[in-house]
Image (cartoon, rainbow, N blue to C red; front, side, top):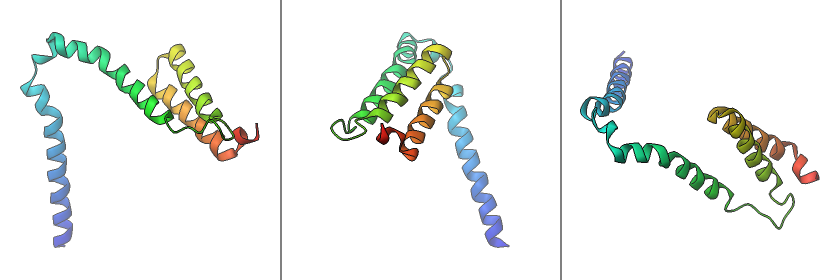
Length: 112
């Protein structure tokens, strides 16, 4: 019985800590969002981070061995095209990831 109470208390404390870390910035820094530096970072930081993630993901792609990066290129191409078409990050990233994993798991890219 004591272990159940302990687990419930741990969950309550973790939930309170998580909630407070989410709400405190809004309460303490409410007026900072209109600052030009914050607006600048909000506009340019997400594309920069995504670019760095793509570069990091593709840095070790083997181009000299079969399938010569074909699954990677197909997944990046599909992700870019879907994002340009629909402007939906979840759809783009999900479809690109699905295509990449499907090509890897089925071996279709290696057979090409």
